[in-house]
Amino acid sequence: KQEVTQIPAALSVPEGENLVLNCSFTDSAIYNLQWFRQDPGKGLTSLLLIQSSQREQTSGRLNASLDKSSGRSTLYIAASQPGDSATYLCAVRGSARQLTFGSGTQLTVLP
Amino acid sequence: KAGVTQTPRYLIKTRGQQVTLSCSPISGHRSVSWYQQTPGQGLQFLFEYFSETQRNKGNFPGRFSGRQFSNSRSEMNVSTLELGDSALYLCASSLVRGRADEQFFGPGTRLTVL
Image 1 (tube, chains in turn green, yellow):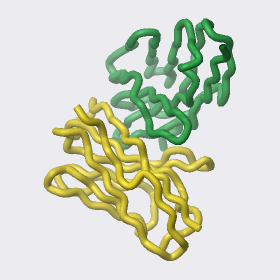
Image 2: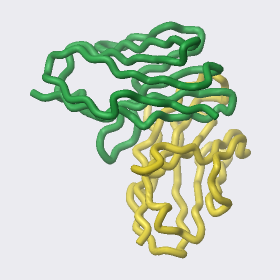
Image 3: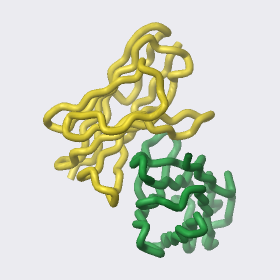
Image 4: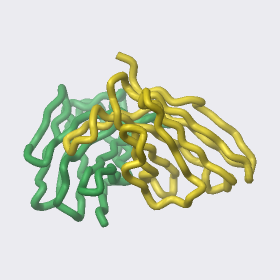
């Protein structure tokens, strides 16, 4: 059974800092990995999708990497802003096809 | 292009009642999945529908059911509500049912069971 772990559970940084969020998964037989953002009481916003054959994806200040063999992904956020404050979730899609989610990292960017 | 829409956004029910939630996927998307989000269990997969057929089901009791219509809209039903069913119910759609699909989520329906 796939298990996804995200560390740290919560992170507080000053504005302008670069930061890394971590995601690990137990079964490396995945099709893809998605990073999402969730604001309080809201739905999920897709940030980046990495296919199993890819090593990284970039969108603006966000960069996500995938090391399938070691079961790890990182989300790098450059020059953080208060508007980046949210919960970040990673999810993997495996042979069962549904997304398996981590418990998320709650990010607070202080002005 | 409109995103995934879910109705209603908020619901308050009492134990023993039943509830129906609705999801309209992004235009052209044919796969719809449902997830339950609670503080204790996080996000858990309920089921997936494609071409009006349930293709995959998570580990939830039979009180949770769903269906998909020919226009890809989907509904989920929870019967005999329990306090533990209080959660944010999220619907996600994807273009086809391929391995590489990106999933797009709606804003969710917040269900409170009293």
